[in-house]
Image 1 (tube, rainbow, N blue to C red):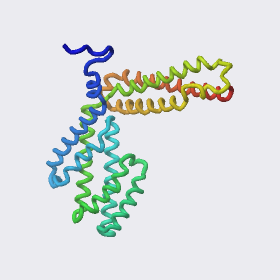
Image 2 (cartoon, rainbow, N blue to C red):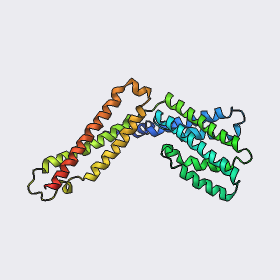
Image 3 (cartoon, one colour):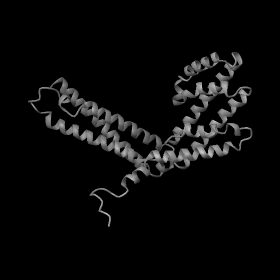
Image 4 (tube, rainbow, N blue to C red):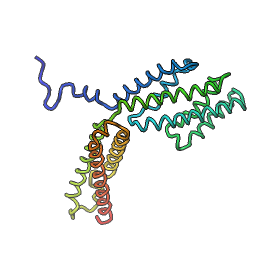
Length: 272
């Protein structure tokens, strides 16, 4: 007979948490989108040789939020078009030489600094190098295939993401819960010591630490922000709008409490 489970521990608890982790869902959707994009690309006439760019586009643009997948697809396509244009221009003016490669990489990095390219900025010099080196003899066709197949992967990524949207409540709940615990600890400390005449220094020097509270607030803000972003264009969120609203409201209330606590610490520093 197997020994009983320790109190408070549910058999398979960690396995269940792992299976329901948002990263697992993202990995599954990305793998599915990459496979579908590759299979479709292999059916495109004259593109089978470069069909691997389609799963590349699916992987590069997949994001937990449907709206983010769409925006990353647009940014990635623009970056590749810019890089492809640089590659064609460099090959036409200078030829496929080492100095051309160096110039294209430098100019591509500069162009990639355009703020609206976001995280896709690195695709500009990469696309320029690929067009120069890989597309030799057929640069225009190669550049068009590269951009078109990347776009195909992005479209598949958006479709898979829209069909199987993620709405992970766990990380948002954990972040809000941790912030609430931190806020309670600070409020209790302030309540106990705000009237303490023996405390010659400021509350901030004796308390749990303002830096820790700010870090906890920043962490919760990032997680809740990702949760709100994932809820946009998400049919699961539209069926339960109160779920999204409640978590956002809880975070906003705690955020205001953190600002008030910070004011109390500031006042105590001025008048210990």
